[in-house]
Amino acid sequence: MSTSHPQSRFTEIADSISGVRDPSMGDERERDVILRAYTFSSVVATYAAFAVAILLAVIGVGLWSVLVVLAAGLTGWGAI
Image 1 (cartoon, rainbow, N blue to C red):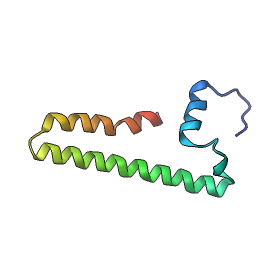
Image 2: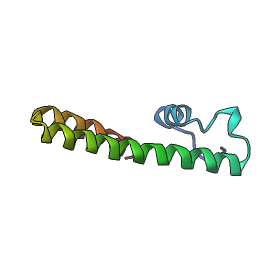
Image 3: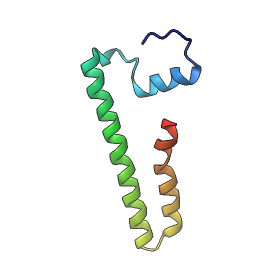
Image 4: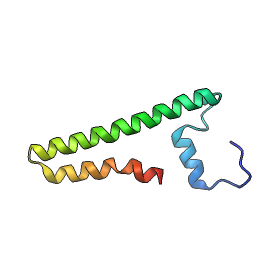
């Protein structure tokens, strides 16, 4: 990834966590497939966390469901 401006430390960390600099990424097509898979798994994890929160609220452990909903929101804050 070449840019005309220097990358910040946060960008380097985000690239290493997401696997953008991983040698297994290969060409653009492989990178597209891998990043789509990461996106899909993030969306599935968010829906699963909300389902767990609803289940906890239904069985009467409503206070713990707040923690699950807050944890599910972490993926959104990571994107920001």
